[in-house]
Length: 89
Ligand SMILES: [Zn+2]
Image 1 (cartoon, rainbow, N blue to C red):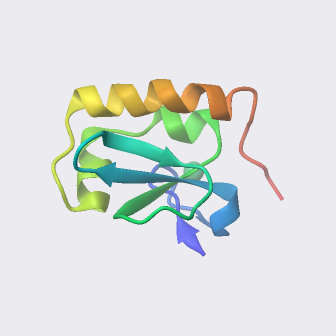
Image 2: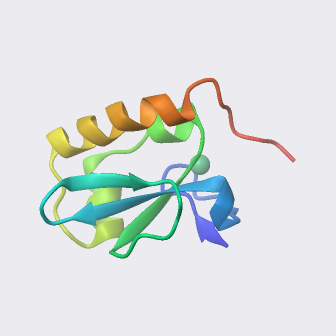
């Protein structure tokens, strides 16, 4: 189980999106959960992706993250989380 950065809920890894910090490319979403690197988890929901911020991501990745990097990862995640909401089960 992993904790979502935004809502602090513990969920199975497959229900979360893994965000990786890559030194060359900044933040990238690892939708397969198989890439190497330091990662943070967020629910596969518009609500939780939208709550991502500099403070929570920097703390989770133990590395400073810029506002621009946050905007970029949110924009790239928009396609994958579109129309999805937090499952309440
Ligand atoms: Zn969440």
